[in-house]
Image 1 (cartoon, rainbow, N blue to C red):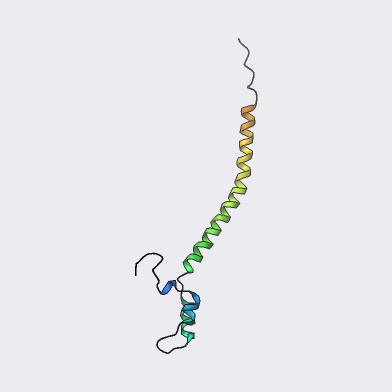
Image 2: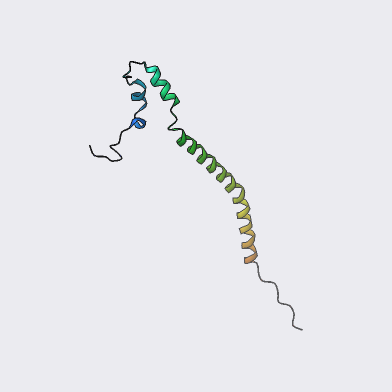
Length: 93
């Protein structure tokens, strides 16, 4: 059988139902399989990264809202100063 990313099938890639209701060759019950499934933390890292990314995005949105108004107001004041007519020249001595 060719080996490739779509052909590799290992213990961690089996579905929930296959893992849960697979017959134990030693004659044990499905309870062992359920306990093994509940104690398996192979997908926990992905969930933790998703929560961390969500928190970073929320913080970025809040910072953008707070600083966005301040930056916009500063840009408007700079634009008004640029558009203002130059001050009159001092009189010649």
